[in-house]
Amino acid sequence: MFYCTAPGLIMWLLDWGMRLYELRKKLDGKVIHLGNGWYSLVLGLPRHRLDGCACTSPLAHFYIHHAESSVRELHPFTTITHLASQNRLTPQTEDDLPVQFLFRKRGIASISGATPKKHAWISVLNFFSVKPKPTFQWTDKLASLADRAPSISEDVEKIALDRSSSTLLSGQSQTGKLDQAQPLSMVDIGLRLEGPYFTPADPSRYKTVICFVAGTGVSGAIAIAAAFIDMKRQQMARQKEDTLSSAKEVLSVPALCSSSKYSASSTWQRCLVFWSVRADDYVELPFFDDPSSSLELHVHRTGKDRPRLDIAEALASVCNEEPGGSTWCYLSGPNAFIAAGETACTAREGVDFYGARWDI
Image 1 (spheres, rainbow, N blue to C red):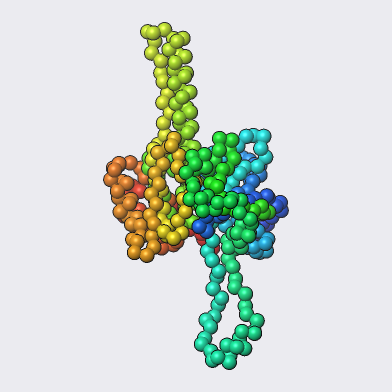
Image 2 (cartoon, rainbow, N blue to C red):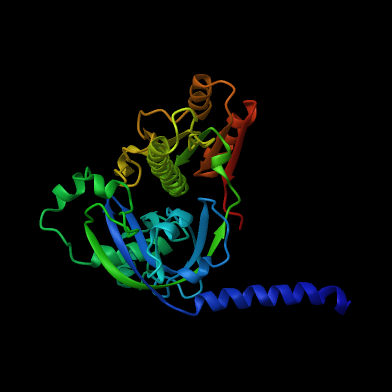
């Protein structure tokens, strides 16, 4: 019996040992209020966490521990940073890679138990009684730190609306450092980070990649979009190099000899993001717009008297534009939204998909 259970027990101990080893060190980070209840969490990931990692999947998640929010809870987060390109863009002299997460404030969790109607004299006694404190969710506690921080701008309304700077929309600068759309407030915090854990996904094998996301499920789409933008930039750089090398060959090779020119190409030609978000919750996120790529963003605002995103219709319209091409769909959001997307993808031949669900 011991020989049967020993291997599993050893693997379990090794797994927990590695997790505790990663969580032992507190990392410096920042919580940034982007406006309308949206927040960005930025911190430095030790570069050695990616040593020996050959995975280039844009989808990766971490478990974050913040003692002030919860002593016991490790909160899962999908990073909006494409780690492979971030590792390449960050100078080798830097020991940490800037990684970024996106979340939204959800509000106060309801206190269990409904309050029944009471007589006037009972209400008076209830006024002097000790009332239970409302419980806040993990992300709300983290967001409250940025809410309590002093505003870093004198004109908050102007900052909240001004998000058109091209240097901020890319999410990254040329040096690999993360840039932010002018935030409302920002606070320094200490966090413990476990991960990364990669999701096996290779969008570059498909001609068209479509992201159907709802609410904060947009995080994975931002990482996929970052991978697409980085790929297009590398293609442009290689094409410039090929043009220069071809020009040199023309000058050095006799005219009777024809020079062969390598044209950088990739299967992945198109990336579309369909983001379904409540109109009251919408904020312009500075991560999608990039003039050097053909990334397409479609924001579908829902709410009162507004229709929901019809995934089947949107998928059909894209596939009909380029019939016969390989297509992969990324689905993220509430379970009902993912289920609707899976149904639409299954009904269409030749469409592969991945539904991002948290298995607890």
